Length: 135
Image 1 (tube, rainbow, N blue to C red):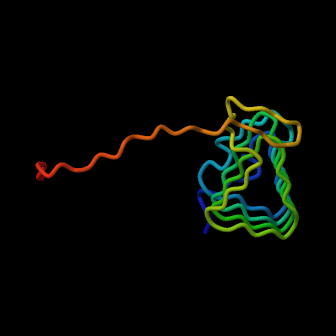
Image 2: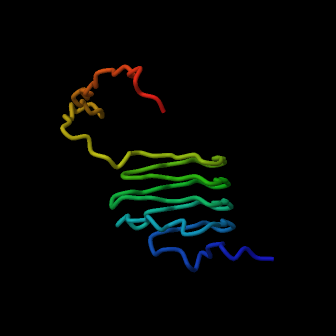
């Protein structure tokens, strides 16, 4: 019995590499693969990627070692994500090197952090319910 949603290594995008014995299942794991790098995704040998989604920006590179098993995970990558050998990642896990949202207005202080002005929330006055309102 074969899994109809399994991705064959022959059908991988041109900039994705998968090692021998690796199985990739689930619908459209590379739908959001926008990386211009080659290779953009490297998955080691004997891995299982079950319902994993790869969302990469134009400069993103993801490297996954050998004997890894990911289930229902999302990898959001703008620059680089590197995962070693023998790693298991479970359901609904998201790994990101970015949130893909610029912080405007923001200042880069040069220390791999961003300093943004504090958000001022508008406060609405508390209204008491009128004793004439019935509902």
